[in-house]
Image (cartoon, rainbow, N blue to C red):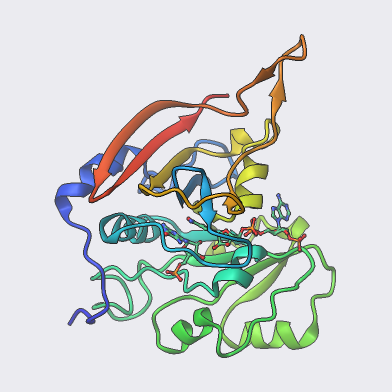
Length: 261
Ligand SMILES: NC(=O)C1=CN([C@@H]2O[C@H](COP(=O)(O)OP(=O)(O)OC[C@H]3O[C@@H](n4cnc5c(N)ncnc54)[C@H](OP(=O)(O)O)[C@@H]3O)[C@@H](O)[C@H]2O)C=CC1
Ligand SMILES: Nc1nc(O)c(N)c(N[C@@H]2O[C@H](COP(=O)(O)O)[C@@H](O)[C@H]2O)n1
């Protein structure tokens, strides 16, 4: 039976998204690299949150359900440590019919991946992610760190739940069981802004942005990649999408496209 807090994303809305999603046969556009979707919700003034260190609800119910559908179609969800600290996120999929929400096991649940170079996320049993693990509603996170020896207590706790630390140079796992074919990158701003820099933008296969009809005002956590200049020193746009599609979800609009390289 589906749980009371489960979300529904109707079949009628799924067709629009299908061409944007990772191929279901696990094939990837670049060898040994996952299919990557950059997806987030923004205000009209490009803010992800009203101020640093806070969580702001931008998506309405329909686009929120869409995000959970996207989660169900990716193996992993990636965030930066700034988001883990600010949001205490669940990072699971709460759609009816996935594991923990009407289905046995954890089928359809993505692996949370937290980029935490210095292992500064001070997680505990009370962290939302670990509560969901105990309830059989989400997978334990993988934490990508550059520390050769992550703190022993954190490592022990993480492994208790089935999570693990990955050192930066070991992101690509060579044991096939833990392969990740597609990753959904949710943010936050620093992660997104760095991915939209020229040297990284080719790593993004799709961009799916929920735009909420609100201005959060100055002082927000903003998506705005570093400015670029042409050969004559004139400012040019930092990044632009091609193959753009728009879709309304309630009061929000969802924009899909590919970064023009
Ligand atoms: N509306 C939405 O859809 C979303 C909103 N958010 C919001 O965004 C905010 C958090 O954003 P922000 O503060 O920018 O934090 P981020 O989540 O982007 O995390 C930033 C940290 O991650 C590490 N990091 C980021 N980029 C890289 C990189 N390229 N290589 C290595 N490490 C990297 C750094 O850690 P270190 O400093 O330790 O080296 C950095 O300080 C929160 O308020 C959250 O609510 C987040 C996701 C989605
Ligand atoms: N799609 C979307 N809409 C918003 O309004 C948001 N604030 C976010 N934030 C992202 O979702 C994470 C929270 O996930 P849980 O609901 O806790 O599972 C948050 O950490 C951001 O990555 N996304």
